[in-house]
Length: 94
Image 1 (cartoon, helix red, strand yellow):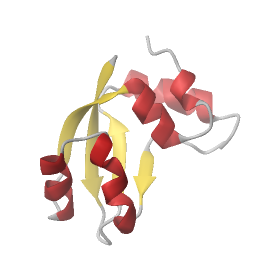
Image 2 (spheres, rainbow, N blue to C red):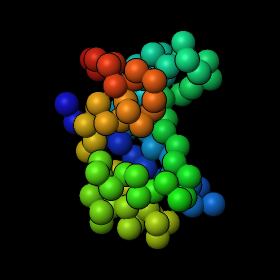
Image 3 (spheres, rainbow, N blue to C red):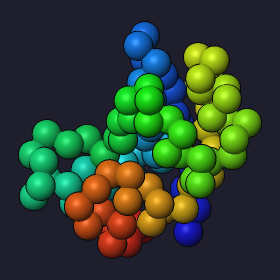
């Protein structure tokens, strides 16, 4: 299943991503509570890790992120779970 994820960059060039639909973000956050109690279901990549996203989002979107723009794109829910870590890729979204 593909979910819509919004990626943006902070003032240092780091990438922050979160599902557009709040219910998906809340389901991921609820699942991650056992591993990281303050997790809110968002992913974080350092500036030098942006190229790690190349297999997940289109190269054009990565270029836009590097230029400082925010992008929204479809991401497989298992890929998003792998970005979060632990066993979040097993979350079955409702």
